[in-house]
Image (cartoon, rainbow, N blue to C red; front, side, top):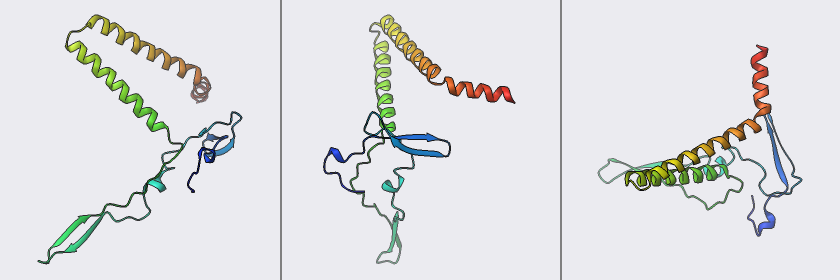
Length: 152
């Protein structure tokens, strides 16, 4: 790994083709930045040293053993291309905030009918969007599952 001097050094124009037992980087016709996914093990070597001491034992003046934690030196690193956790955590954070605001306003009896209707409409819209996305995006997968079930 080398240090980046400017944004031109960022990887661009590559995409990942992933399938069971297959992973290939190919050219991205749209020439996008970060068009691949890093698996959860991809950053492990950068985040954890191969060998690091977690604690140290010394004898004090009375001869008793004294245990002390050893904090490893953590270098400043930017790992580029890991976006999934940030997206999910941001979504969870905002969903929690909206839910807490709705509950607080309902407890204060401020516009409960309107709040209930807005929550139901929003929840229904999200459910419908997810159902459509899964239904349209998972047609091939569902066809494969049905085919496997009917072959047995």
